[in-house]
Image (tube, rainbow, N blue to C red; front, side):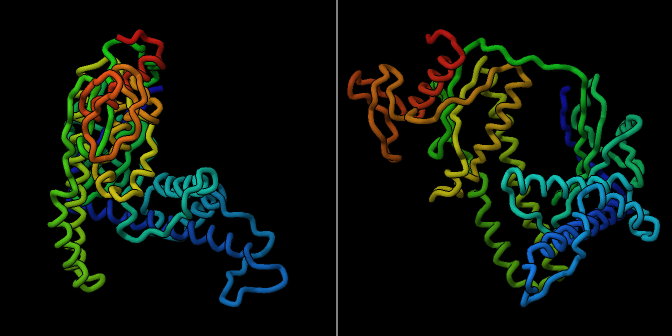
Length: 385
């Protein structure tokens, strides 16, 4: 089963915008109510059996079951009969809100995520229509339940043989978007290991260096707009809370952040395709980027977005039939790629690799990329040139 997600810009009318905003508000209230119900049940079980809290405690009967998804979905069905606000919102959309909350609690227990938070009117930004009986897209319009025919900007054609499974409507700073989840019952075989190998070393002096000697400069997405962003955030401190001017300034800041994010993502996609044009196999380091983000250069690391780039590169490689793999990152800059001798640890200011044994001299990042390529070729069992 192959699943693709295509994102398109929606161009709704003012009436449709009002409906979308109302659905987001109802979803937010349902999510907060369900979260409060679960939180009160958990807090009521924390009190000692022989005393009560000195502050306050919400008392729930001891035999009351935990409000999981099934119980909350049943309660939602009953509430829709008496609450007109819930009746005007699609039932499946509200069920998806409860499923997302169930998933958040599951991730908290299994993967160590934080406790789910209550959402204000700015944090609830999307809702999902989970299924469609027929294809809702015709010409330049998409038919959504309760919203009607919404104009959509089809910036690229939808591939043949795929069936639309669900649509997520997302509100962003620059407008409304539809994320279409497409599925096809085809099986994609694993990409074979063939073609020219290419090792990639990422860094902050240069965005990346390849084993073929190419150096890509690091675009400073945030740094270029940081002065403008700082000025706007300084003005935000002077605005009254919940005022119209504060809301307008928040929207302007959000549009600036989205511009930075979109520029970074566009650069990552174009660079990934550029690298796939040169190689049949691509190897990168298996880095723990969380430790990079906590250091003194954390802001620049997050601005570069190496984690997003690796994810995009892996997806583009799979799409274009290029083999992608991660290799061990240890000592890639401390071993000579020409003779294999250990050259010792280098300072960050030292940008040239010079082997004391074979006198091989090359850019430090390119030497590390050659070592990454060497390890990747050995891992897949190919012959090193």
